[in-house]
Image (cartoon, rainbow, N blue to C red):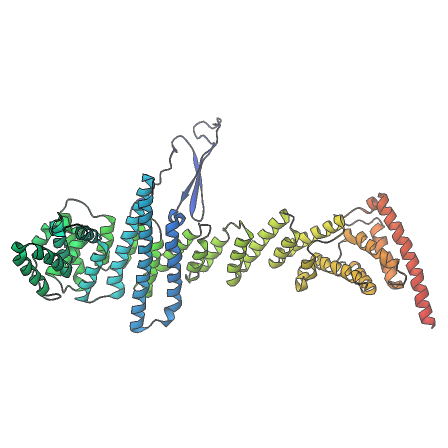
Length: 615
């Protein structure tokens, strides 16, 4: 196993004194719940009254930032697009496409950074302004690192063009020069501005010689005494050889340390004037010596310095490792690693716990997204593109999504069904069915239980439907019951519910013979619950009283047998006692009416059938 680099970071919880209070905690998918307990480890018998304080420690707080949500949303589209075009990428077109993807990621970072900067300026609360400004610095560092990785690892520029790319890199990220340029040129008399010559010097140090010559021309036009000097300097800049042998004085360059802002600015200036044809393999030597010269032993390298140095050393894994430690979320390392993996730079690096670096970081990032109430939908696609552990991780996380609304539940359900996640579909449907039952929405509950293929719950809901029918004398949600179709076979009780509703429909259509036959079959086939037999026999009364004979003699005998079974004193476990039925006046009246109606119908049926045989 790999050794830890150091002690893990300690998170301090305000107001908690662990030496006085016993603490307990519980892990969540993206956060940890910490609370005080009433247990006193010194005095076991004494309990301290009071309400314990609960703290939530979030792992990925950045997902709750409105501006950073745009970063997550827009980069998601770039990520998915890259995975889908992977098979089409070959040869030169592959490299060009990967560079284009990298630039798209950087443009998203820059857009978020600019918006965050505007918010920081507009913030009225100083604390909020500082917080936003800090986030701007982090985003700026992220783009700086990404851009360097793009140059070194994705574009893989050879000697010569490499320097041109590095010059563009410095010009883009050392933006103080452009601010100074705008300030000088915006003044009434630029050549008399206090920072005029400072600006010219910085432009030269950045290799922006054309702009420096334009500044000198302004000086020459307005000051005849210095025109000759400016003309000589301008000619030197115009004829300066680029990407060929140069012998710049490094000591002279170092004297301009205050104008160079940082060591990597000094590095690129040094390469421009001393080593313009530097090869990629030699970059780390010049980078390390530039860092040492610039810092001069006065201070230690910052985390950003270490990350950039690892990039100049072409140590991709160290870049990712340092970024993982320094940055506050997994967005950067997950997307950069995925892109580098598509560049075929990480295939040999497997982690000791059975995954590769790309997949591990994508899983961590997606897990953080699932802690958010809406960004979890983005996390689904990241799990989809993790071939080893993505499926099982998605199953574990999707079960923890709070189904706060039916609309959200339907989204989750659709995702599960698209991926044939049978167990999760069944679990979600069952949860929704239980919620619907608690809210007395029986139609919705039955629909969810059918979708879950949960026979036991479908039986429970069917019983509720039948109970409501007995109490109110009519069915609710008729459309659902009328259109059960094959779902009716999920459970015997559901089958009975559907068939019983069909009996009522036949009766309403005055198809009395079909209705009678169906009613009798429900009782004799044992599909109808025993507790419902009296209701079915009562439903038979209007049919027994019809002018024409509906029940045949044999069918009447069956009905009489069912009635006698129900009242014979042989109770079934869990159902109403037969003696109770006999003692109940109403039930006794029903029984007598049924016996009378059955006897009359039997006589009429025998006469009818006898006369038919005689004829």
